[in-house]
Image 1 (tube, rainbow, N blue to C red):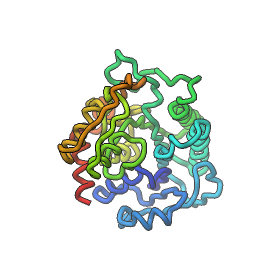
Image 2: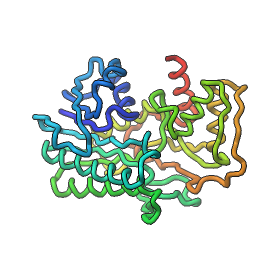
Image 3: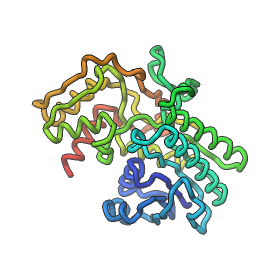
Length: 317
């Protein structure tokens, strides 16, 4: 079987490559789309060593120039610039997600794709209501379509709908991974990810600054578990079309800061912005029973062990 991957040089792609170094994939050939394959190979050649991978230069917004003369059994569309998203205009974010997804879906029809795997986001559910402890896949909440800040979540929702439409018309299988929050040695530490910022502060022996009141609840899944689950969705026949992917044990941002601090150096100071009234989206916790039932009996790491494993790996390297 052949696999085509978008977003293969980002966090998800690096997590998959590390996973495949220890768990060889079933795919005979894997094509990774990248805007700058030479730069990636220069910096991460160890991640592709021994794997049947060809890097293809191109952009998801224009795949007409990408020439692959083989059918592609599985396409994994994992490309979204989540690391630079906050610096992009909201319209650009929406356009990149929706237009990019449709370009990849068209590409799938040309190459006789049998299965399309879309990495979506828990952001498609909108704000988690206070009474809902964990968000299940059949919850039909959605972001406010009149709020420009909803561009990412609504863009992902539109990408899901496009996937269903193309699969219905062209008769290929599909599965959607609604991804929540993750942590791992490949997570950028200097971007807008709170856990990454806290780890970087701790490694530099700097004060950890919490820009909110620290009450927001999140969960974090380790990148190796993320890779295992995405690989599973690519390889196996799935009962459902949508799976939440994440850890289901919650932790407050305040607790997260102290967990990182205590794992690195208990002398580091933690400062909380007590003037903040908290986040509008105070909870972001998935119900993961569906995905856990799918991969049973493998035990997935929960938040505390995921954070501790990440710091252990970073310190080791």
